[in-house]
Image (cartoon, rainbow, N blue to C red; front, side):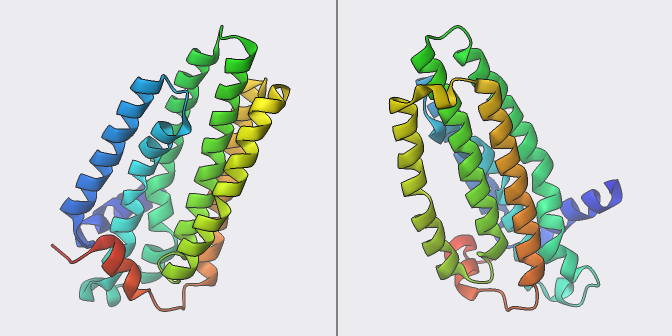
Length: 218
């Protein structure tokens, strides 16, 4: 497993626009940290951006598949189906765990309503990560379809969770339970992404995904 993880990170150098992608990752992390500090974790956006910053590694690895060297490599299938997830999952869980702890500190001692809002936020972050991981599983094969599905699958559940948090705060009153549910969602999203990449492996990569998301190679 350690050898495979090292191979995954070595592949990054063959990706498209590596410097640009690292720049975007740092920008997302900086925005996320700034929002977290400004809101004291009261909004899910900052935490989501922090976790999302690590997912740029996924893009850098899978974009290496356009390299001539990679096309003739026996690792081609792993580069599409295994290495991206293998590389990002540790960072995703570490970042999310840090966020869970920090938000838990803020929630501890808060009045019941605020405590429930923190519970709802951490659950919502888990839900967003589930959608994002599933999105990565199909976006590089069906870019437009996956983007439309993601845009349609996020707003309504977000509104539903917010309404529940404000009208029935007891649903999210147990922060630990909400955090556990968020971990389950993250794990299910990762598994779904893994399954989707294998189901769609033989499909051609979307040129639009690389043009619109990754840009031109350095």
